Image (cartoon, rainbow, N blue to C red; front, side, top):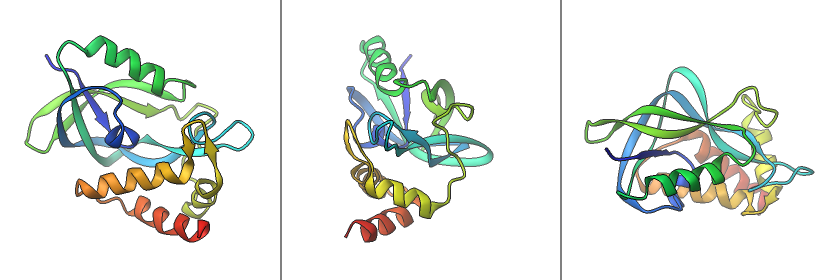
Length: 176
């Protein structure tokens, strides 16, 4: 049985593990948003950035990618993902059913935000998000680079996200 991972942010363009199959996928009852403060990768404790997370919401959907892990690398992949995604315990690891574009339904490792964690900041206005993203910088680089890469790669896949497109345009104006 293949191990699948659901990617909705940086995993779309930088999975960090060997992928056997990549398919557009939809996750029900969650939406992608900049609802988690980043104090490691895209910001610092003194000057937090924002990263995308999946926020639970009944009736919502999130389009991303289903990534099938190369056979035989499941344990190493999970170890890598846990080190990467669970760095501050703001994400929860869940195995959730996703619908692949070809009609298959598979269970996928999915990292969703813990709404009770101190780094959670759901419901922040887009203008405030843009201001933070425009100036934050962390261990993996500038916060705006994360936004631009994610938006560009989703667009290349034909995945439309109104908020990311608005944020991309606004942050470009703020940093010009």
